[in-house]
Image (tube, rainbow, N blue to C red; front, top):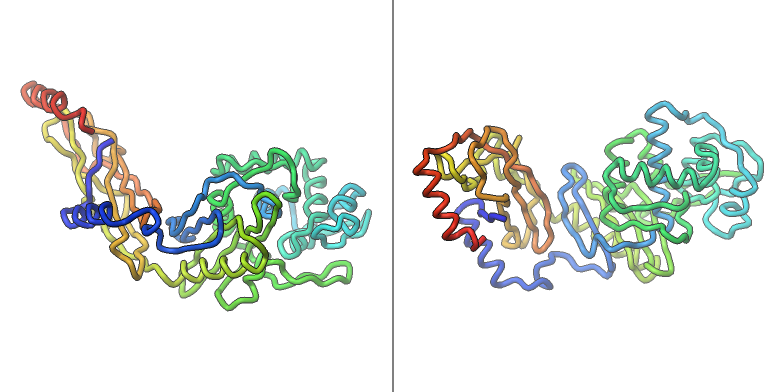
Length: 387
């Protein structure tokens, strides 16, 4: 792999950072969560990451995937909000009042509108609501869980696997905080008409009113979703979103000790996310970002640019912890066509890879003369092993 820095001033920043920052110093935010991940909703920029790919049981946060399947069916016209589903004995026993788990207290054999089931799930984390939906859509909860995993792959979740619709403990059921945050971002972007259910403060069903289980909704931080969960193996977790002054962040956390610590750590992370960064354009559209070495061409290097402007999120403080590199596999063999993918610009905030922007050849480079190609071959023989 070739490593090229942005501009001469970036060389000083990068070298000084590599020499002075230890991994413990490099992180800009500290949290008690064992796993945490936060992104800017508008751009997908990673603002914070801590052990984000460690597999964890999703617990009740699996219901986000249940709702994704439902929302997708509504958006495609497969379902309508006025469709009704019947509460089976299985749904009533496993997720209803007899279960002792989170429930909307749906009556056995009653018919419930889909919109009411959605509110039961998004507000009350209703296990009976999930199972009723799963059986109504797929014939059985097992079939529905298979559809959940299939949809997860379709929207880019590479490892999340679901065994049931509720998140209740089950062998083989897993996710990670990175993919939970990506799922939440997908819900916000793709289903604005349905995302609003996550921000409802309470919901009443069967004459029983319950407040939203998300503790952040009662705090003055602009939170409007999404889900909480807890398991014996991974502790307390949360997937949350908040917006402030036009900035929206989405975070997922796991491995917290109790519900109080979960609420406080999530509040701190979201509040830091919406207040501690500012969006800055570092390269305008069509502006040259850097250069990649060319092998066997009429020129020794090809200029690179992105498809559009490149914006990054700068920490308002600790700006010296920002570094950037152009990374590509090279040298790039001639001929090179204008617009050809060459590499990427990677930006780190502390030790977190924050964003990656594809870079393309800004010009065409034709194959060089025989002497030029011979000289490049000699150079490659002499110094290629150093890469």
